[in-house]
Length: 283
Image (cartoon, rainbow, N blue to C red; front, side, top):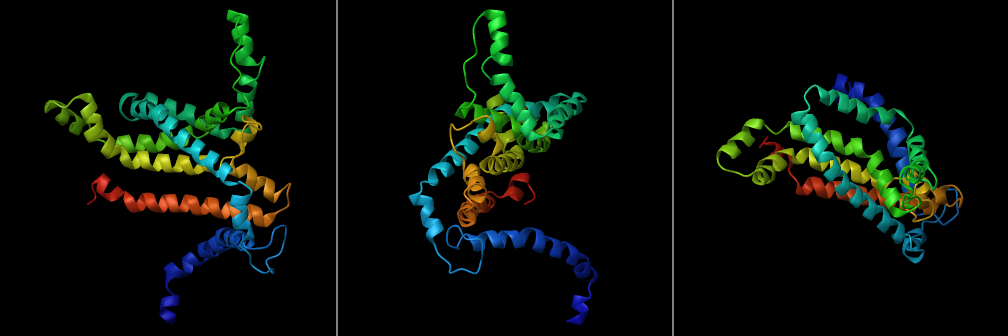
């Protein structure tokens, strides 16, 4: 037993394990504990209750969940349509220019997300860049989409584009060109090659990009506040309000726990149903 405790691997892992315990597991356990505390209390030394969980239904917080899940799903679908051609070009066509495209995609990540979103506000605002330019050039104003659901979707697609694009590039890089050439020599159409050869082999990148984008969009906050105004309320807005303005930590905790549980269940279901090793060809 003592020799097992003295193993170099175990000793080396202790600092990382302690860091994860204090920095990750500890706060998560506190949030779970507060979700069972009475509303508007700031101590874990109270009698547990399920009142916060029932209030999710009675106070119609499921509406926020619905909007968050719906917009996250729409974002994933739009990003697949937008990112797939770009990723295909970066993996197969652009050659040395692929590095330039990568830099152009990465550079916005060096700027604060809020600053980038406020740039879209200036662009979409009435009498802003888009509206003023169209009036000056054609005498017609732009449609007002700021502070609406389409504006939120635009912000989500813009912010999370890299998180879908780069996994797709990796996935498409796994597709050997010789397989597509062989399928073409056997008479397969371009659509058949895409459906039977390219998409199945690129599926790991598609799944990872979709899952990553969905989880990030599900917990998004700035897009709905800056570009959406009060058009809709997403679940992250309710969580922030509960922890700050309402000073109701148990309510914010139960919403956080439900969001974490939903995201975890989705990831668990995905990896239970989809065998990435089989798709890649490892078995």
